[in-house]
Length: 377
Image (cartoon, rainbow, N blue to C red; front, side, top):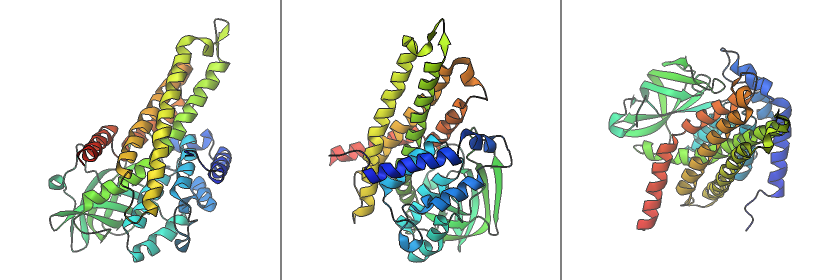
């Protein structure tokens, strides 16, 4: 079997790299990082929308390109490589995927074309503070179609137009679509390690809420949404990890110490090889996740392998990106810790992506749980 991208997918990936190389150099990322008033780059967001990437996996009837999820994975990998400062993940991996999988025909018609056109940004509002959220601890409430409660932290909540909110209704957890530009919504931008992906506290006081998916199944729906997002995030992490390896290698071959390039020293070789090994492990798991994600959209009853594949991809990619980003700093030596060198852009993003859809610890628990179910069967 061929476990690589097809020729057409490789072409798409190459074109995405060329496009981002010209439109998203490190200066664009730093432009957002250096400006407290910006949490994403609007010109890049518009350019990405013009490329059709926001609607890559959205059906043509809803204004998208109608491509498969593997094509979306290829785009995600290049966005991760460029550490693109745009709310692509929250909008495409989460809001669009959630509406396509669980939305009504009316919700799809209202939301998906706007996403594809770059006119709507999304976010996922689940957390209510430190600690695991359980049905009994869920404080956000929906009564009579009105939402009350606080969600913190919410990635891209400072710029999003639509939020998917987990809240209790009639004593049972459900998912709801909330217009963040409407009445009853207050936002507070928070500081974070990676300011190129904004974080906010969302306070709801009688905000209009529309149910997404079946009533009372909020936690199951959130996990299904995160399973899909985990695979796509894994490709972003893989792209970032690969770039960290390239940066470390380039520096090691150009930096001299005691009359020889530092890449010739065994300690540096070991670091580069360790990064490479973790990246390849992450790549294998990400490819398996991409197959399962794509299969889940083609099979009537989904792909039973997706929860396991998503958890494995998420764990391996989080580990690889974090390791590659910190080891790249070490290879660069004293320069690696400075603001002028790009290493910190990738370290920041590695930390942000490892937490945005659940921590690695939670995904490890999910993987063990899924394997136990499989073995019991």
